Image (tube, rainbow over all chains, first blue to last red; front, top):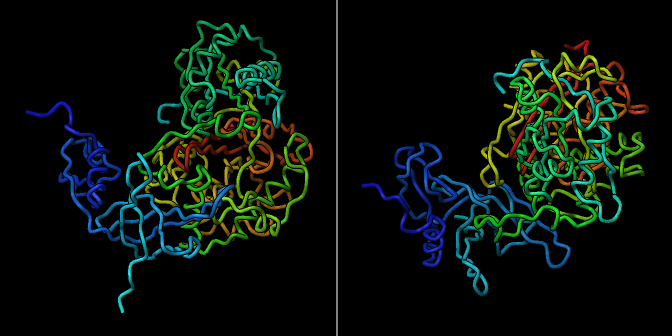
Length: 130
Length: 384
């Protein structure tokens, strides 16, 4: 029997992983590919069979910019290529925003947002191997 | 756009509404109606002749319905497809199809925005995206800046080369009496302007103005009896590669490659056949990407290509001859203005900025964050 409705929404599942400190993402067995952002069907095959997996939390900066708001300090916005094969928007912290470089290896951590806002993933520079 | 016949339809009327900063309390619908009125006057038609309404606006959710009421055209064929700024290039293809199918005989394509007057936030409110909004991207600028960062990384494109695009647009704008910007601009001034989203300063970003307009389309056969020479629709193409920048398949290769190829195929032309280009320059990187993806220079060489004023009024390739979204007018969705300028160039109506012997024009619309690409190739009777 196929389920008419997923028991939880893709976003809820994603956020539940973040609450646990994990970077959850979907994998399509038929396409043999990661799917991100999370959705109810696989965009490569049209199948509704998507598995949840947990990434190791390592990635590489693919593109980067610094936003200069009218009020407040400049901040980084980046696209990160996650090692498991998907790309996401995030920011790189613990380094001045203009020092974030394309190709930089970065490590995931959960940002616990203020108040009722859901957590979201941010990145910090990964330690360079000696 | 498979199934559309080269040259089956033509643009016969084109006009801007008031642009720049419009009168207090003008609505987007007022501007659309004003544009339609002027475009009909341009070709000698009356409102009662119109039986097709194609329009899009960020401030009118059901813009075609609202225009049917405003103009009292209850039986008009309607299409309010909205894919961002390139909606109007898509409308050209949809109108061409509707005209060929007999769904309408006189189609108007219209746009209106009071973005400058009411503020950008109110004119085009952003949808919440749980996978992007928490990171506070300043959209759309940040998305285009990410693409620019990647282009700089992969191909060595420089901020000075990006600035060349803004300077060329400004030089064209100084030849256009209705352009918003009236003062010369230098590369140094672009680089030292207020930063927005690195590598962009405010001078790498499109204007925020009010404005609107309309064009009138009909079958090619009927178009020959209108007041002015018809501008034929020779080919259209469109592709939507993504909606949000984090889902763009390749940040340095836009859907213009595909939409352009489709338009060239139908038009039976290539880039060397094009006399004048109107490319959606919401940001300086756009012009570079589209020149590459539409075949005017190899991938990655757009920066050197635009240098030395090549796309300015004194250069060898006329691009964005009205001053573009960077210096002429940009009320949120710019696509209609590309079409208006191309029509005027092909009619020889452009005065000081007129491109000599312009028989073909390539219009390239861009919507979203490099998301919806739509190319339209237009030509005079000589190009048909």
